[in-house]
Image (tube, rainbow, N blue to C red; front, side):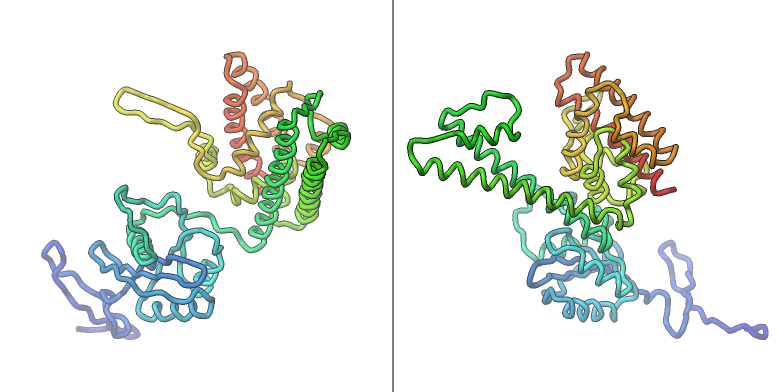
Amino acid sequence: MSVSTGEVARPTLHVRGLLGWAEPILITGGRAVADYREAFVGIDVAKLRNAIAIADAGREGEVRFFGEVDACVASMRRTIQRIADRFDRLHFCYEAGPTGYGLYRLIRSLGHECTVVAPSLIPRKPGDRVKTNRRDALSLARLLRAGELTAVWVPDAGHEAMRDLVRARSAAVEVLRVHRQQVSAFMLKHGRVYPRKKGWTMRYLRWLQEQTFDHPAHQIALQEMVEAVRISKERVERLERTIEEFVPAWSLAPVVRALRTLRGVDLIVAVTFVTEVGDVSRFESPRQLMGYLGLVPGERSTGDTIRRGGITKAGNSRVRQMLVESAWAYRHPPRVGIKKLYRLEQASPRVREIAWKAQSRLTARYRTLSGRGKRPTVVCTAVARELAGFMWAVAREAQAS
């Protein structure tokens, strides 16, 4: 074999391929490309110990249980490096859960691919009634190799901190609702009905203070429940002030400001949408975002029969609830109030155009559906679905500018 000057000869081997002819295998650095090894690692995470399984590449590749290791960072780092010494490329996955994204960031820092899996979208056999850490790890590794797992979007550290703050506010609102319900149930049990429609105003609180009971234990119980309402309300207000304080320094603050130009979307709704949805550019169309939020109708069709039911309610329930509440604002005729005028003056012309188009369309949509006799809850859900599409457009415009 003749080799021109300056060129390095690369020896090749020929092996019989699947179709019968000889296929060359390039030898580089004394190692054949055929020796290239790829593996898929499934991790069943827990508070104390993580179960790990490894699936070799290929349809007939072996799937074996590696073992359980301590969940601490040092132990997982040693284990990952130990597995990496035996393979050329690794793909890791584990289920999203209370352990957070620390393991994801550790694996990425070591130079490997990692997927955080949506637990509700993992394929499961109907008759599979046995669930152990070992079986879960083996199943994750096998499904990762088959490409049957759905990944969740992983936020960065700053985004995750804002999301935790917003979720803390949501939890405080739920506690406030429970405490108020306890007061209302207590008053109803004793036959005390507030004579006006709107409750939990200053007048309502004065009415509560004027109530007297024959037994002093009832009076103490009422005062304790009213005090719990007051403390819960102060906690919600304190968290809302904290959110408003941190938003200007956040990287996604321009998106929040742009979303607030829409009718019915204020600070809490905008921040909740951005923290829960994240980067809207990962959705190629508004329809994908609507499906992610569970605002699209379910369907059970076969042959020529088409049956559509209520919304799927799949995906993020926090954003879906916020959007349905915001949709109530579109029952009024389209107009720009003083507060929204201030927000619109700070936005770009394109965002202002989208905001007015959304208000004109959604108010007309509300009137049309109400005129057909639809229930208000159904109307608001339909309006919320289209509002999500307009929020997608505004967010993409804000990120592009």
